[in-house]
Amino acid sequence: MNDIKQIPPASVRNTPPLLEVLRRAFAPGRLPRGLVLEIASGSGYHAAAFAKELPHLDWQPSDPDEGARASIAAYVADAGLANLRAPVVLDVTRAPWPVDRADAMLCINMIHISPWEATVALFDGARRTLAAGATLLTYGPYVIDGDYQADSNVAFDRSLRARNPAWGIRDLKDIEPLARARGFSLAERIAMPANNHTLVFRKT
Image (cartoon, rainbow, N blue to C red; front, side, top):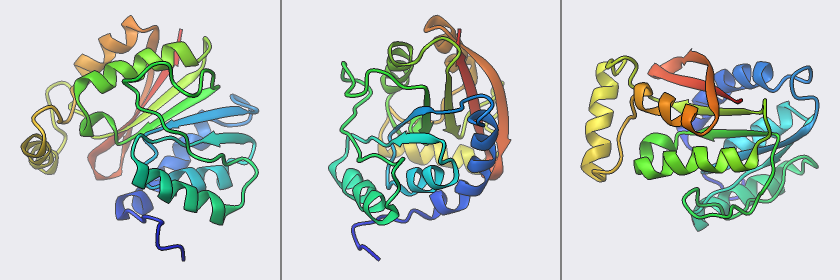
């Protein structure tokens, strides 16, 4: 196995439940073909798995971190899939993005491990990149109606803020109005294992 490839245990665990969601949200009947732009792809484990299981879609991984992009590139090379593209440098806070149009977007575990400005920039970029009716999926831990969902999430939030005071688990009551102001409605909130949620936003 290529030793550049990162294999995060959390990505291995959450890939099967995320695939269940993606098979519905990006089903051929809803999204028969097109480009899915993955924001903050990290290791590339997800991109390779999703491209393999959803071959009707083209997958564009991205990450601002050079080490992450090296890992993604190794996954791309090993997978040998025609629908899995090489990673691009994309920092959500820096416009213009290198991808100016996509048919759907996916963002896994970025919102809580970045400043709030990155979440604002994510929706700003999605507004520029996606057409009306397109889907933006985000995944991770969220505060719902003031509830952290689990004591482990409270402890995780404390550890995030100790590492960087600008980080932290975000409250859905802050994300929803931000999304609406950028032209997105929350179509679905899906409870996931390990006290996470997938948020399904649609551009109006």
